[in-house]
Image 1: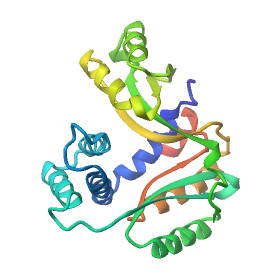
Image 2 (image 1 turned 90 degrees about the vertical axis):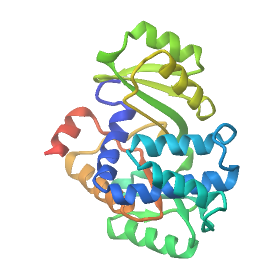
Image 3 (image 1 turned 120 degrees about the horizontal axis):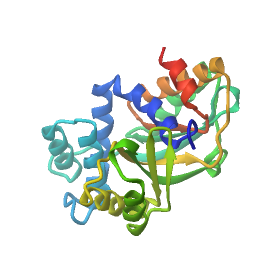
Image 4 (image 1 turned 45 degrees about the horizontal axis):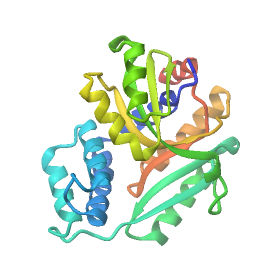
Length: 249
């Protein structure tokens, strides 16, 4: 997997989002609000809320922001009604793309997202046009230098993970979304340091592009991530390590 890891594909997009912490906190607040609205404010029974709060903490979101979003979503703050939508489309060079949306105005968001795709050489597609290329999975990243490989395999697989693989300087633990929390907690209980953890859609097969084509796709991802209603963007573009080094320049 070296050079073609799932984490490599996610890390560059994370870097884009990290440059916009203000927007990121707004997106995380919406995620918490919707989870609290749908399942209540008790994280012991609402796993979606527990996951949303954990994700907010990983991104250094202040505790008062988290508490405010929970209260708003559970009805104490008169939370707005957000709708969860998945948009599908094609980026430059036919790259498949999925956008997770949380919006209080479907028509406004559809128009904005369609325009972003068109401006950057892509097009918004019909429902089902590319979703079949992706599978929802939990991904936990551990720095290889921080863990014994045999110990990691033992803990992760016993907790229900599907696979543990080496990707460059990292180990990647892949699992089904419904056991993500259990695997995460088992690794923490075993004192295995976690570099990053998320549940995301991952492409079953990635496509390779040259540097210029990749830059064009990343510009589209950047523009989509800049929209307040877009929670996350995934694509089937491959980002090998050597290309990430070049892009970082």
